[in-house]
Amino acid sequence: MLDSQISPVHRHTERTGSGMARKIAILSYRSDPKVGGQGVYVDYLSQALVNAGAQVDVISGPPYPQLSKQVRLVKLPSLDLYAQPHNGHYALRPRHLLSPTDTYEYFGHLSGKFVEPYTFGQRAFAYMKRAGHKYDVVLDNQTLASGIYKIDSKLDLPLATTIHHPITRDIKLALESAPTWKHRWLVRRWYAFHKMQIRTARKLPMITCPSQAAKDDIVSEFGVAPERIFPIPLGVDQTTFQPNSAVARAAQRIITTASADTPLKGLHILVQAYHQVLQSFPDAELIVIGKLRNGRAKKTIEALNLGDRVTFKHNLSREALAEEFQSATIAVTPSMYEGFGLPAAEAMSCGTPIIVTDGGALPEVAGDAGRVVPKGDPDALAQEINVLLANPDLQNDIGAECLERAQEHFNWERIAPKYLAFFEQTIAAKC
Image (tube, rainbow, N blue to C red; front, side, top):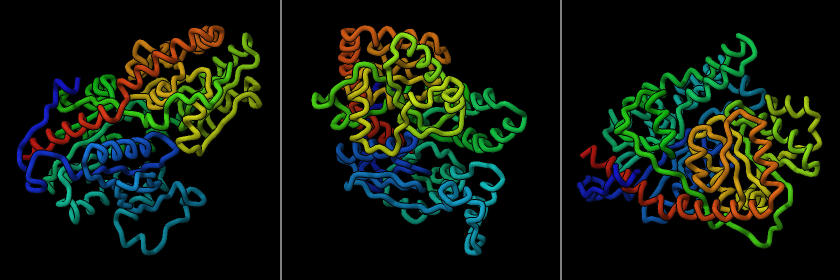
């Protein structure tokens, strides 16, 4: 699909003397390497672009990513209030009042808003005013802040943005799951930044996203013109996530990842399904890559008395995570919605059979290799898990098909040139 929309261009730029994007800045307002997918994305992408011959700087707020030595990290410190004692309520210092951005970050946070996209946008714009001349193109990783747009409108730098999926999807599910009017008010308050993101997205000249489903939703939810959106799939570190004969595959081990216990991730649905699976396979294990947090999954685990059956693992290295996938019988992504579904792709790269829901782009990731069940349906999910656990030959067949698909479609060596072509078109639009 991308190939039909983007072709390399050869227009001249003042920075490199050609239309080639050789000096690339990637902006990311938070890039935790082990919680959520943002840090993983900027690490994977930056390394793939370097391998393709580009020079890459990642400009990030905290938490900072773990990057290759070939990639330069530019840190834009924030107040990082979520990492402070007492949720940052007592973190204000007199010097912060000298900065309008710091002041807004503190009091916005105190009032229940998530303001990091806005404040990072202000800091990123200030950095680009000083250093933007060094770059051929700038890629924003879903900050979608007013300050980010000024990089295009005020500084006239070639700017593109990655939107993994529209945040309105998260908001709708959170509101549907909120038990009281007070909780709904808090949800709306926290997600107030989405209005800024919608306004910004509609102005941006070039947007990429990881799937056709994400593109369709960005068009319908954000009102962005479809001709400005170019899907490019994500890749996987296939030197780490690969089959490993030295790791024994368990007979009845189900694995999933949950960066947060939110309705979007559907972990509570998998817990309900697992409770049913235990009736047929009492030795079945459920491993969750993530922390046990207060939320629907925790309540479901407690209600079903599964506290000693569900194992949570967090803060894993990439190698340790790969070993978890390699040892699992089945990998499940129970999400209500995903703009892509990187954990499913990583499991496929390990030759692990996957079961995903039909939420968002997950069927695109699974293709004809994995199994797809209706989202939000624990009965259907339990039935599919039971079928696979009962049939080792079927596990092997699906695992082999998943591996073949991952090697063909989620290979960064094939994906990086598509990003470079996208960047070249972004540069051409400015010439």
